[in-house]
Length: 325
Image (cartoon, rainbow, N blue to C red; front, side):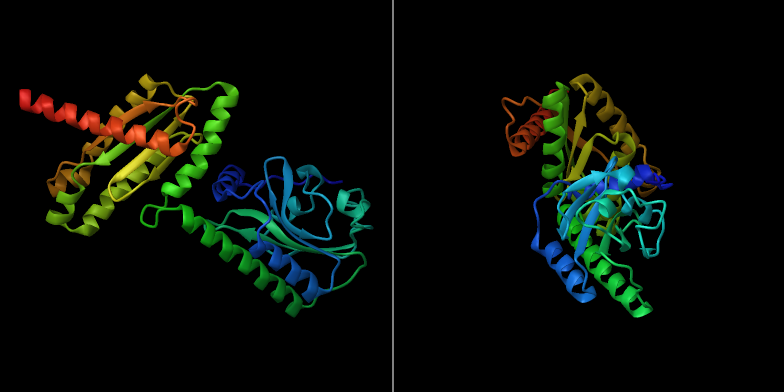
């Protein structure tokens, strides 16, 4: 079988797919319903929604397919995500690119194949909605439009999923999203015996900025913090906005002293903001750092609570230093 090419935005595409938090999740009726509709509307034996991971094609919802994943190198859908239009194969059994693939040679016995790439809001094509028949056929323009409409329903579900775990203002994880993403990363740390530290941030001047300069300026400051977190954190790190003026970042494979250095640099970058200098306010935050211990932090919520405690202790210590001076 012809090996599929790699999309030009592969790094961003994979990161976007991971952020969806859908891989290896149980079946969901909202997706199962769509593939049932596709099979019935087009009168085909098989339909599925799948995602193209680093080295596999994983099936989220399917009818008429008897496996949950196949190698990416044996995936027709890995070819489909290279373009924007429906990917159509009139007869896979005579197409030299795919004649020895698992969908053609296996029990599925695929001959006719058509799929629509599935995109996230940022344009990343993460998977496909596909229908398969065991004999050759042709779809007219109305049929293709119908398949596109079904794909659009899937994409709307992605938007719902992302909005549930994403902060509306800054576009980074919210509390729910952080808990989901952090748990996976911490499990990896335990398996590979890697250190992890959590930094809990509180923007101390947000109320004053909102009162004196307006909420639009306060929102801009919050977005500044989110953008600095994106810039300073590595792809393996997890960060989120927990509440009105609270942020958190989980640094993977980072001991405490390294995290302290990151926070010091982050603090300087934020306070040197040209906009804050022009507007005449001091943009600063307090933070607390806690090292992850899988024995003490069996729940992410416990780690967050310890981070909040460390942040408040740091704030209290700072106030005592000011009083003593």
